[in-house]
Length: 222
Image (cartoon, rainbow, N blue to C red; front, side):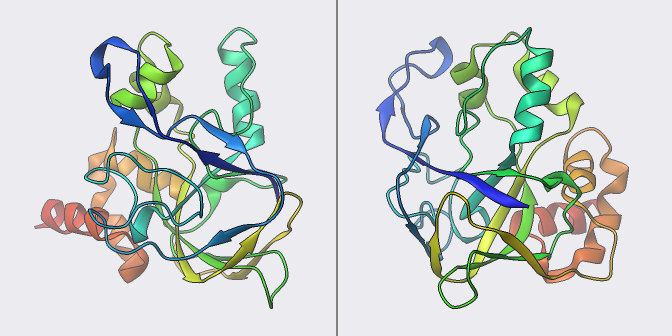
């Protein structure tokens, strides 16, 4: 797997009806040159882990467990086909890393990715799945988008920053650690959305799960 583009969002006000006038950084565009990545701090106070990227809604987005969002170019291509050939550029889903050559949704929770060289690239840990929100739906302006995205179950992965570093388009993604459980990003997404009976299973991922996801699974499991 490799990084096709590193994408950054600048704050702008939404124009779609259900969130008009709110600030958002979902419109991310490819950056030129290396970009620093570091742990941003707890949710509510920390924004994006990617330097120069905007998280406007700190209550619901950003923080250590959503420091970096990765989405596969292959999955964007799937959506282009399902949206009647609508072009989907890198970063349009709000992802920081558009990747190629690997199945992001098959990554295990707790899997660790080294981006680029070992001495300069960050070490990232897969910890969550993207849940669609109304800002995402309004931005794409596709009817029934939250439902369609949920049913298709190609969520992309949230990653936390274990070691800071710099990322750049073209960097290789090397899996340095793969845990001994079967909780993938795709399984976690289904457990949080359409198949809640799977929630007890995601606890197998242990502390690698994001805090909010772990709390939901524990509550469901009783």
